[in-house]
Length: 522
Image 1 (cartoon, rainbow, N blue to C red):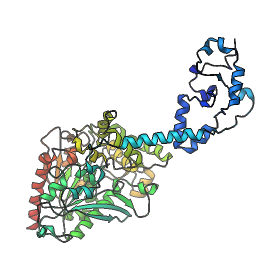
Image 2 (cartoon, rainbow, N blue to C red; image 1 turned 90 degrees about the vertical axis):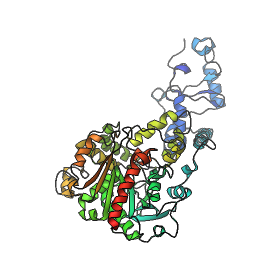
Image 3 (cartoon, rainbow, N blue to C red; image 1 turned 180 degrees about the vertical axis):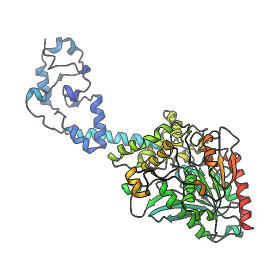
Image 4 (cartoon, rainbow, N blue to C red; image 1 turned 60 degrees about the horizontal axis):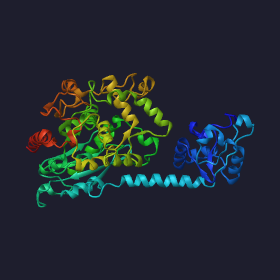
């Protein structure tokens, strides 16, 4: 009987590297699962590569000869009879037994395996990213401006620089497809004789691209432009259509913001830019979810901006969501802990658009093997299950979703959810005293919002539920429209990308906006 400590059956060993050395046959290396996994990781991470190479063993003809000599006569051993296909087993003595330190030996063939793993993985990912020929809408490869142009609308692109250095992109559709160039409404950059401008602000984790997912007969910007409005698609800091004058997206300072900063800088600076560019004194404003909540914050903090808003149309404003039914609700209060973990890796962004996100999103909804994850991913980003998006436009939606925000912004939203107060960011008692002059962050006083507000909500909203609407409604002194969507299945994100949104919401919105526009002209 031979020493079991010196000779273990190779099949019973979970990690050949960690326990028994390398099983070899001539120049061939036999990989166990753990070693292969670490080699793949090493190919992508050179820092880990050096550590794992330190436990590699030299494979040579000499080691083969030594193995054969060492295991001569083992053919009668029951365990070794099953070792078919291997001429010998080499086992290096453990460090504690040999008393010698293990010397790092780099195999001359190791580079080949790592390079091979890298090439295989890269080729696989590139192959997965290639959609089936003819199955993807060409808009998936276009930006917002190109999509709008392709639909036959004039579009102009601008950049707004906020007072704290963020540069936000604006897309303008000055008139609809059926307005002749000689019409006063077709004047470019000058005050029109028709309707005032309309600023349209997106929700959390989206950008202005979400408004053009659907075509001219369904998308809100097209509907408004065809109705005679001068449409301005706005963006928030942190998404794909924003940058900073001094910081890159890899710097912590770029992501040091919450929706307090969006209310303080992005929204008012965008409104001022639009009014200065068009020559109007007032603008219409359409905000969805966080895009509506940030204007509520501005109007409560700076009452003078109430005079610049002709009509504020709020789609499911994320002001109160104490009765949230979304599965993301219980996660919101944990974002401070999640942010602390992410900070250990130098990440301060949440779902920032990058190579990893783009590859993941581009893959899961295009192939049968991964389509099961597609709806779950959309549910996670949207906060609730929504009715299926137009299948042909799904790649267009995913080409810019998620668009990213900061962990600090997610922490702030979690505070609103947990505390039930639409208040400023909570830095902790000591810093709150330094910043706000009180131990608790002050609440936004919505009773100071004197601009006319049209409130749009739905029973099918799991993020901003109908049960929380009375709390907001009772605080607004100038509520001119309380619009409940008739379709109880209409969900939160369908305000922006629902295929039935025109009949359910937009037609009523246009009627209300035109009524206020006529009053402004008179």
